[in-house]
Image 1 (cartoon, one colour):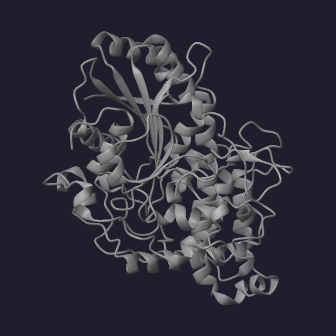
Image 2 (cartoon, rainbow, N blue to C red; image 1 turned 90 degrees about the horizontal axis):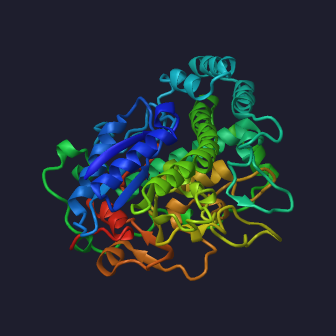
Image 3 (cartoon, helix red, strand yellow; image 1 turned 180 degrees about the horizontal axis):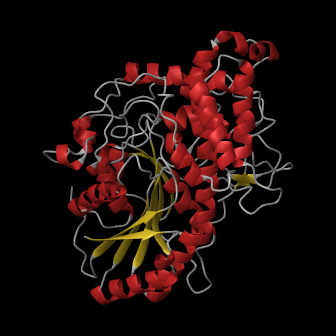
Length: 484
């Protein structure tokens, strides 16, 4: 399989570069192009290793097509990872035991944050100072909350201001999550609680890394087919399946006394991570609409005989999904042959025509599914605790009182429990999808919990997609899978 890389921000990789690539694809008779928008890249993992590994998995599972070969285009976009986050396929696998819930506060991602937030150096340096000293005072945590609001603030009406929200049409539009405006000590206390719950859940579910999610150098033999592994496991903790509850003011007041201040700094670091993710979610949506969509249009115009299949993982799935809003043209109303979203950091109501708990409102992408000619596959895992625990707390909007003590499902993620509020979309296990195939078109939820399940805090289950069966799901959606 021929592989290419596209940096969304590099001038040399603009429309001219893509036209050149399209010309080479057409000359080679390439029938299908898989465009993979990867999750966050950073200096803590090596993007090329991740890209090579998934390319090998795709090559191993692809069937030859009479009408041409298959090529892979890896999409890189400006993002970051925190120092304690590792991607198994990159060669930086987590330890063999579940890591402690507490982050390493001595490693502050100063250079990464300076690169991610140009023009906000004073705020980044102030945050660095706060985390280096970690004074045992509630007021210092309040200062961190104020600094984080400054870090991601946008002018009123700025383009991209609403890009962090996956719903639209509400009576009172909202774009800022409550974690930015609730009292910082309370937010840090909640994130501290969820870090502890995450570690406990990992231990109970025995979600330790093993050889089947190690990098390519450690994989001595292909994985067994999914059917040989038994039924998908249950969601590891009942808390993740229950609706959120309203927390009383007395309970919120108790947050200041429940944790010692040094312990609350663990939650403050998680708040820093989640606020950074909020900025990256906005960026991914904007880049999807403005750059990825334009790139797909360019490829389709220059090589109309090449079918384009979009694939996204994590926030890369957000980038791929939001590209649907601008990818269509009058001559090419369904330019995307298939779309596969793996562990998508997107609201599970993003495709819903209405929002159940609101008088009005709908998913931001409710009307763009027609841009996909084939299946729109949502791969989700109940073991992805980054999306199951942290995503609802980080995306709950200002003014919503529910979900303070448990992750409220109204703010759930596609990558945790699949698309919600969508009529007619089948629910399949990964085994069934690989054995019986997928619908020819429309949204289909595929539960990948049987394989996407390993890893420790702070992102258990989220990056565990580097499996032969997951690659075969991508190929099945594209109509490219070889015989099992």
